[in-house]
Length: 473
Image 1 (tube, one colour):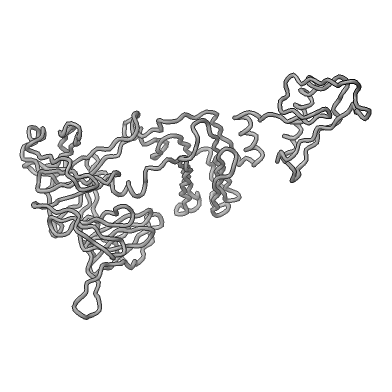
Image 2 (image 1 turned 90 degrees about the vertical axis):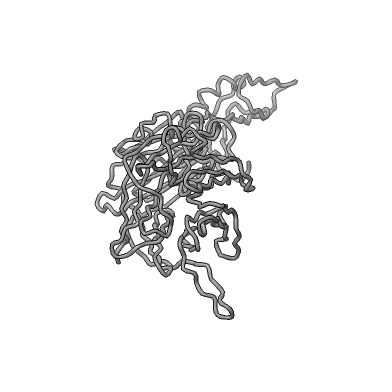
């Protein structure tokens, strides 16, 4: 089975994907996770696993057309989307998943339709008196529509127009006269102040040379306009010469890397004896319900047992198993460890690679007491680290003469006479501590024996410190 020919090249951040022709010509493609799906004529679809390079035939769910009293027939699709491994086809272009249950797509030259994933309903969402070249939806469900060759219109989620910006009415006309717009996308950028969003456009001048520009929505002007070393013009979807220009892939990022209040632990290891055997895991920890303040995290990787554990504040949050010993021969202490930003390659972070040191960094928390071990620590050691970080909780001392929950300046007074059965030796019983490590037990015992003499009544000595686990609390 032969893959379709795709010629990709890069130009100052813009990625150009050529509709080439080797043995097969694809109509549309879609990426979900590690799967790349190609749509061909007659609703044929191939799926390629980007990790294993395995190629499979995929059945898509297309819309159907009713022809008089005959059985419904499948409509030949022009675009596809994928959700949870299921591929859906649609009779339009530039399909984008909307609110997880609908798909928006361009139909004809001047209409944007909304259709449910299962094709049970559809309706016209927006229409234009001029050709719609491209559209995008941001995280707040605002619509950005690029129409004619030089207009951008923004609608809110109720489809009320917010503004229309044209080349002639903006500062762009003085920089690039008669500019023509080709592609619209959105930048999602992390910097010192947090996360920012802004639209960008790809266009061309009268010499067909491409340019990139940022749209400032506050002043309704174009900024950072820059000519790049590539050439091309806009062709509609039916043209054989059409090029599909990908700028920031915002729609893909929006659905695959949603903004969540979470801390993500990522692991990527490669079997040194089989370079196709790759461990690539992400474990998100939801922090939306966390109280403000310090929290304790432990990531434990045991390549011998084939297990990854995440502990949050001393409790097991999630555990994942993987094939035992596949990665045990790799010295992971010689690999890269990155905290608070995105790793790129070869011990280089993404901010370093992009030469933007103040961007793409964690900026709303701090890290302290960072420790790195060369072996998988035990559960008891994890509890000890938690105690070391937060400090031990108050001791509860049960003595013959009463019960106190603090240990400072305990005084004993007896009216008339001391009890006739008074003992000068006592046992201290620690109940339900869940401490199983003998070394830790001995350390606790030594500390108690050292401190207890300061608070014991005169003549009373400690016989022993005993650890007991019971069901009585």
